[in-house]
Image 1 (tube, one colour):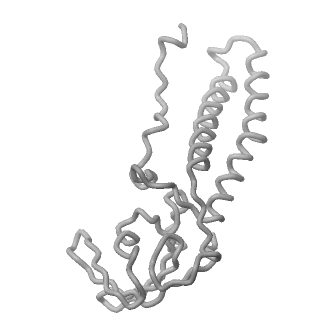
Image 2: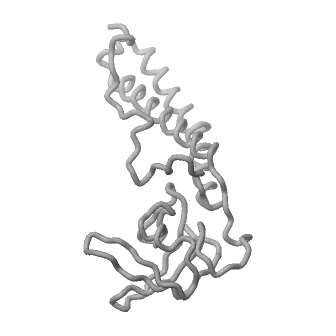
Length: 185
């Protein structure tokens, strides 16, 4: 059957989870570490993994009947996944605006790339770093600048009390400290 009449079941590039979408009209802010990680992944895919998979597909195709050749079918599927990821990374890096917290002017106001310590209503202190949507890592307390907590904190100053709307109601957060330092991954 002709490829023109088949439909691929893989997800479309535009179908991203909500937490990975950059708000319309906004820039794709990233830290230098996040940008470098994506750049390294793109390099690995383009220069190492894709050529290797292409070689396997060519070898499998030379073996004859492609309809029952698992190496060929898997390889073609993997090539589509790699190409999709390459397109995604290329778009993200092309639209990225890298902001280095270490070179940012000193301020007590919360902006992208800030590391913020705040106190919750129950007295617990938490420290988070505000990073790009592609850099979110909850075990390291790296939250996206589009997250509800970051949105509540952005533009507030050290000593301010901000209000965070949660499923359990509105919670007060008191900002204890704002720093701009290298964000470790």
